[in-house]
Figure 1 (cartoon, rainbow over the protein chains, first blue to last red):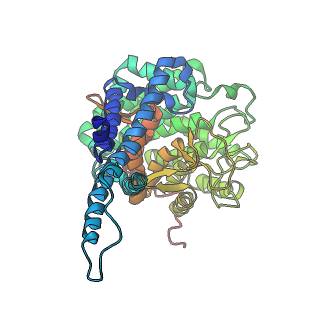
Figure 2: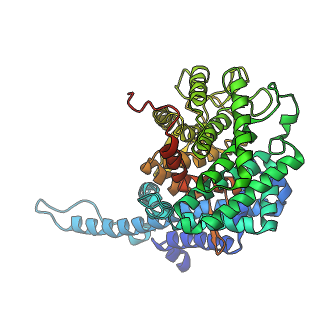
Figure 3: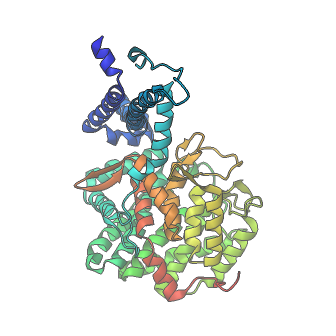
Length: 115
Length: 396
């Protein structure tokens, strides 16, 4: 439960997800599957090259797409969310201080609702 | 809600800036003064390695021929053109580069002699009879003439003098005999790609031999403009019957190369065609350049020339590759940079000690890319010696 809460604390979860994607991409790159992408160039007769080569070429293409599109967005989103959560409570805390006209009616959100 | 908003913000930050991480350094492919950059040099290394290793070459050629025998042939043509440009630019490597070019030309001529004139064509070339007599393909004759002419323009090889004259004579005779001044590539099927390249080969040959085919080339271009201009776009059509009926309208894979070839025939018209093609086909998505195969609203079907078409964007691998040639030939630096950025991102470059190649491409694709990045000296030398066939530079 504590681990789950920790994983859900921005930016930990997002950065770990992005890292996992990059790790998978690094793995398929290390396995040399990048070369099999040539099988995906449309009109090549991929059947003659074997199912394994076709599958690994496809897998590499998918991992690459995830690594250059999804992973960076996840990582940036995690950081953006962490900063936003850090800023919002501060602002609320600032707003909760008695203004000249009287108290603000908005209470601070309980810590447990931030996850 | 905050997580979703963060994701949207992150996407808005990353997607428009991703191209910055793929954009090659300015001098990586081509220096400011047009010399090949280090990445282009790596491409050269890969091709030289490929031709130095018979087993590897055989495997690559067999692989291409399984899809399209034309690729085997075009890969040779573009590589010889690239090597000739490099040899002109780097005199200290001339012997090495021309040695490889000669090996390619000799093997190509030997294969044609052994297996026949149709060896480098797709099987349907044998399904019907050519209408012209003698039955020949301007695709084969034009590109062989181009290889010989480019090689001879750099340095004279006595063994190629007569073959060049013979091949150019065949091309001129075949095109002159055509009802619209163009010859067949396949039975009752002419291609702008092949005829434009053959016309350019004749002009390069003029610069070698001192002959002057300006009148013939002027007539060819006049007939081409009259019969093969698409009224909707002003672009030249790609495929037509022997008597000039359009089979397929404008296509990127033909137009980028045709505009480059037309620089030797009529530079003003070439420039017009390039800009029309650019307006109709060039696109930029989040900083990544690409090209469509067909103008918007024009129906077309993907084939071995267009390569796979990316849905929604309508990006064509074949057209985008040849767009690099167009952008480089017409010094369209901005578009060239966008195209090279996309190349780095989605063509899957593979670097090794043997050089640089693109996994999503093949030998012909890499050879087109190499030629695009080193072209210039050969065309310039031709223009310096004989000028364009039509010099209407003063016209608006």
